[in-house]
Image 1 (cartoon, helix red, strand yellow):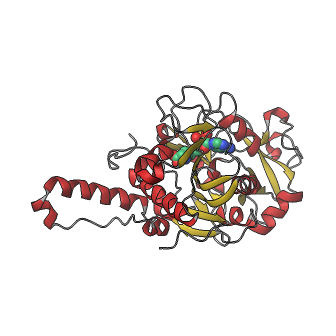
Image 2 (cartoon, helix red, strand yellow; image 1 turned 180 degrees about the vertical axis):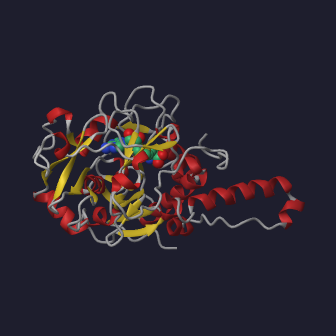
Image 3 (tube, helix red, strand yellow; image 1 turned 180 degrees about the horizontal axis):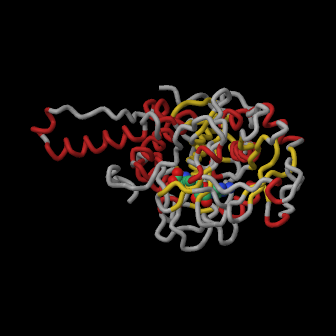
Length: 387
Ligand SMILES: C[S@@+](CC[C@H](N)C(=O)[O-])C[C@H]1O[C@@H](n2cnc3c(N)ncnc32)[C@H](O)[C@@H]1O
């Protein structure tokens, strides 16, 4: 069900969210939200009891800690032995078409040129799932580059059986990378805390129990409050929410820090300052359906990425944000239909070309994968993503 899959017959959703309308979260979408208990409901003073995240009073803790365990604990959604893996629950660009891996292979070739064709060229598939992207890239590289490439899959889940023996499977990226580090739909799965504005207008940490019940915890202070003020300021309107992207900024800066020379790319569903969703984007996916975000280990928990904040985190020159549509067009994925005349001269070729055009259209579609953000960070190289 991966490469070459018939997209019309593929029921797995792309993890991009519907547009959020204004209105209180709980009233707006009750079917897709966890039930919320306010402190007032359980005998508090109506403004919520101050509970420090991590103390887990009554099983309540911050979303970051809860999601960390639910996704990456020993029995977590992504690490559980024998789990279906990401492709069993939703589809990413990697699963949508082999053209995505082909484009990444072409990007790796551009990085290779920019680096002066080193004797060892690293390709790091960061958050590799089941290794689908690195496998596709290896298959798409010209022989002279494939011979020099050192492929790594960085993933918290175990190495899948039957993976190409050339691929080194690791839980952390290698150091001193010379080449390309590519992170497709990683940062949205880096757990974050959620802030919500209370009745007095203060932003407080949202606490959650394993059954998805929420309540408000302590007011946010320190680096988290500073992050919100800089990247996602919350007006003093009760019920507004934001995801605090600080752990993602740090994760991205650390990943970029593993490069000695080359390019790091993060691809994800994203938002930027001025267009943040008023109620946040925290949601879940399981077995091909979007579902309520409950940190019980049974589902993927995800939230859109403040990619502009990530871009600023490494404090390096040359960071660039572009849409997947523009990035893939630069890399030769255009989605143009084949000429009708081909249907009479080469009917089988025409059908193949039509299917390829359909896949390219999905990868670049407005309102879908095409709107994903690409964050490209060169490290001691030039811009290789310009057409
Ligand atoms: C949404 S899946 C994306 C898989 C693949 N990149 C793709 O596009 O199909 C996210 C993956 O990130 C992995 N992951 C999350 N945090 C990680 C980390 N710190 N190191 C390595 N893998 C991580 C998860 O285990 C999961 O397999």
